[in-house]
Image 1 (cartoon, helix red, strand yellow):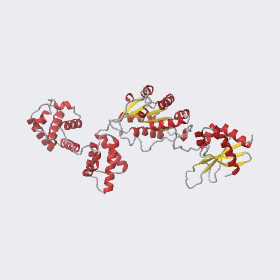
Image 2 (cartoon, one colour):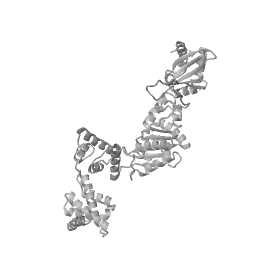
Image 3 (cartoon, one colour):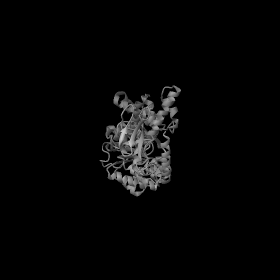
Image 4 (tube, one colour):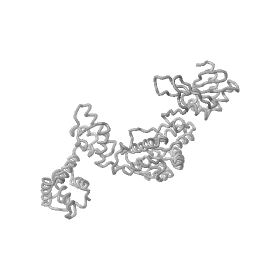
Amino acid sequence: MDKNAEKVWSNCLKIIKDIVEWQHYKTWFEPITPVSLKANVLVIQVPSQFFFEYLEEHYVNLLAKTLKRELGKEARLEYRIMVDSGNSRSKPVTMDVSGQGFKSFSNNEMDFPLVINNPVKNPFVIPGLKKMQIDPQLNPIYTFDSFIEGDCNRVARRAGKTVAEKPGANSFNPLVIYGSTGLGKTHLAQAIGNEVKRIHPNKVVLYVSSEKFINQFMDHSRNNAINDFIHFYQLIDVLILDDVQFFAKAEKSQDAFFAIFNHLHQSQKQLVLTSDKSPKDLEGVQERLLSRFRWGLSADLQVPDYETRIEILEKKMKNDGLEMPKEVVKYIAYNINNNVRELEGALISLLAQSSLNRKEIDLDLAKKVLRNFVKSSSKEITIDTIQKMVCEYFDVPYEKLLQKTRKREIVQARQITMYLAKAFTKNSLKTIGDHFGGRDHTTVIHSCQTVKDLMDTDGIFRENVLELQQKVQLAAM
């Protein structure tokens, strides 16, 4: 290091320290290193391209006045910018830049482009970032391909695809995705972001949790930099804000987001929000914000049904290159029915135990491992439960089972239900008959015998009954 350069820069810092706020001084001036002093030209080294641009934009007059005080009217400042070469074994690449804006690049081995695209890992700490430098904060594993569609999420998923294809140019702005914990809100929201980046690589996408948004707002507020904070968010083309319910009672953060929302919406930028409740049920959030949340589409995620749960497990197994018996998959899908996160957690626990204990995955191991997930390892099956299963299986209204009708599909559904009720419950024939509109025990006996006969002569009928038997058995585990 040039001793003369170090002395001149030290004298400059003494003046700057008395003028600039302490936090700004720590952020923007302490990282600077004086490199050399030749005649009236001081060369200083800065950590990044962005750092140089920020100094030129915000502190160029202060630097010029301070340096001229030390070196005279002809004083000039040049920057040496450290640029990541992308190879940890190589020396850092330097980019020499004149304070007047004339740039000359030097490196012994290769030339570098004028535009340096250095992603900044945390896009909230330093305001004024250029668009190309914003890290979207997305997890690449969250895609539409890995988000299984079912009745429980069809509207939300398809709306998300529409938003990703034409962000800001659709009626789903904002798109509010809401539902209970573990149903895939974050997955779907980030899938939208990843799809936007795939289809529209020049769009600026940012995913952020509301908690992080609030914390960053508080940091900027303490540093009197709220305007910079708001300006940063107004650069975004697709803003994904997760868990907006945490905005409750954070009044000042809500004020900032209100300004950001208005700017983005008016500029036809896309907003995607997630919440554990519908906008109408959010408490502690300003009404003016809630009214804007209702401008677009609110789509809910519900608990996935049995078939969707099986598909989720099979997709997860395929992606991870795993195999397990069908009966185990069905057992997990039947018994883990709260949310997707528990479903995947149960699968991971089972695979871990199988690997650690060097045991093949079977139904016994599944029952043992999943005790912490399954509330009851042995459930008592009721006639009502079987009735609902059969009705769902054949898509027959429940009340039709109780009515006197000769429609073949209704009669067979009722007969199968009686047959299964006799096989899987301890109820008397009379009790079973009572559950079907007060029919007597002879009707139940006749129904059971009819089912047995049809199973011997009708292959499709037999498959239906066996599949229903398996469903009841799994439900009883």
